[in-house]
Length: 126
Image (cartoon, rainbow, N blue to C red; front, side):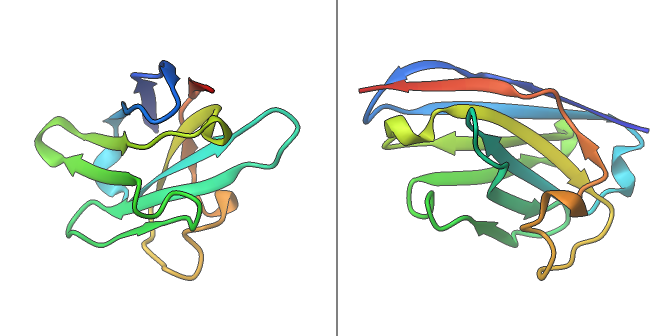
């Protein structure tokens, strides 16, 4: 089993920055991909970004490209999401997820990921 715990969410004004973290424990070494998704009330879960544990390959959703950066610290088993130039439409619960297989064609789908964290709330005020 893999446990994922997010932290770092909060309230920020539009244009501000926030960094959320995801700490992995358990059999986390078996996972190749870590992803961030977000879900706003009444909306479907949306892909934000993903990163490969072994190299620098990373991908972003169109709505966050150029504003968000995903990174990893293998020694700490932690993945980060740095969010800059935040907009009110970025308001959502942000979840991290882990997948055993790195397959570009599927990494955008929530169903590809086997493990999920509980999420952390990010609220951007206008």
